[in-house]
Length: 140
Image 1 (cartoon, rainbow, N blue to C red):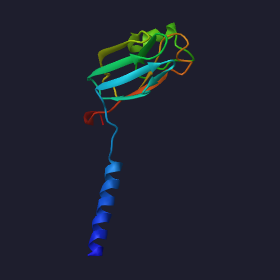
Image 2: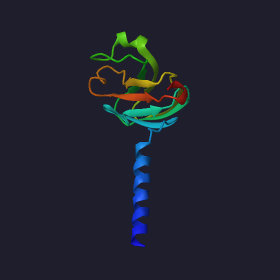
Image 3: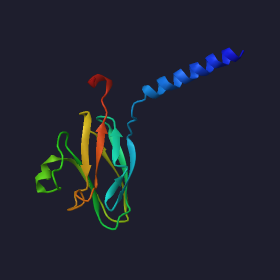
Image 4: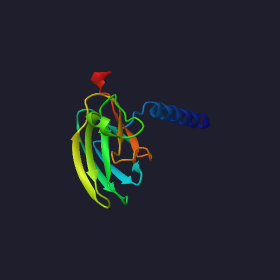
C-alpha cells in the first residue's frame, strides 16, 4: 500500500513539473498602471497582438506624466527628445492626482516595445519599461 502512495506522489510531482515548464506568459487586454515620480508600476506589460487594450492609468506623482509607447524596433537614446517624436506608436498624458481609462489597438508585430515617460528628464530618471506583444500561433 505504501508503494502505491509513493507512485501516486511521484506521478503528481511529474505532472507539476511538466505544468510549470509549459507555462507561457499571460497576455492581458486590461491593465492597471500606476505612474509615480519616476517609475511605472508595473514596468513590464504583456499583451496580445492586434487587440483592443484598455489601460487604467493613475498618476500618484506630484507632477504630470506620460505613457509613450515607441514603435517596434525603436528606442529612446540618452534622453527623450524631438528626434523621438516620429517613433511614437501611441501616447497619453495624465495630470498629477488624476486617473484615466483609455484604449488603443496593440501592434500586430510580436516583439518588445519600449515605453517611456515623454516629459523632459523623466526617461533619464528611470521612468521607462517594456511592453511585450506575444506571438500568435500563426506567427510561429
